[in-house]
Image 1 (cartoon, rainbow, N blue to C red):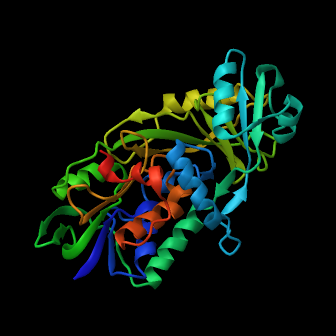
Image 2 (tube, rainbow, N blue to C red):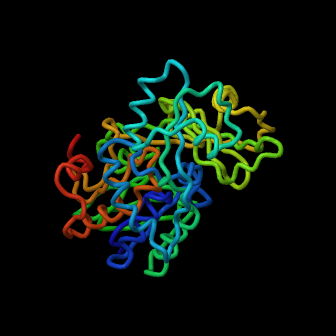
Length: 357
């Protein structure tokens, strides 16, 4: 008899598994042949403390101490540079304030990214405390911790159906049957589908596709120490990665849950936007991909027991904030599951609990 079964092997499911494994018997089921396959494996891998709505920002802040811990070293300083063009003044001001940026001169911006086209840029703002997240290292930290504390991790194991009988879950998977006291839904874009398979009402968590291209850096230009660069209104972004540039049109297309792929036309729009602010031609595309960012109707994460079924826990709706909120979010989930004093309280807690719907 298992204490809890977790559905989903992305950063949400694995961080929850690691948090709970020291206290209860945990089995994690991942439908794909590999862990961290969908959105978690396709992250832009960036920590921005003031990225997201107010509830998400609270989780970002609460995760920072763990992410910065010297013993783990999950973060590397990158910086964030916002660039605006003529006619974008109002939105530029809004974005700057929301992201906690400070206006700088074009010459200061040019020092940060020497290939900027000064003629096309009229506004620039920056903050240094934005970081690359070593997502592989963070995920492996949670995976190893879970295994060290006795968790079972089963790949290629798809949930078929589950029902509650005498306060116990009877779970049928593609790898056989499991009985458990509780079930945690960390299925990302498939969270509503998992809920329905378990006889639980869905919460209208919807996946949106976002595309990324990996571009060869302009010839003769070392981009490795450039900051992340954002367009006004979150219309595109670019950041260095292993000597090349990853560029996204920051698209947000509502889709059904699926193994996402990038659309050429959408990618081209993002690359063209970035090309417009630098004075050196981009080289060829090296690769591209897309991921699904899943949001609850109010944009907040969903963490905690279902309002109608206390044996079914939600850990979903991470949007594009899964890695940077994982520490605080998984700790909150484990506190709620183990009925401990929670680290997130008041209005923030109420804004995360599934009972708000």
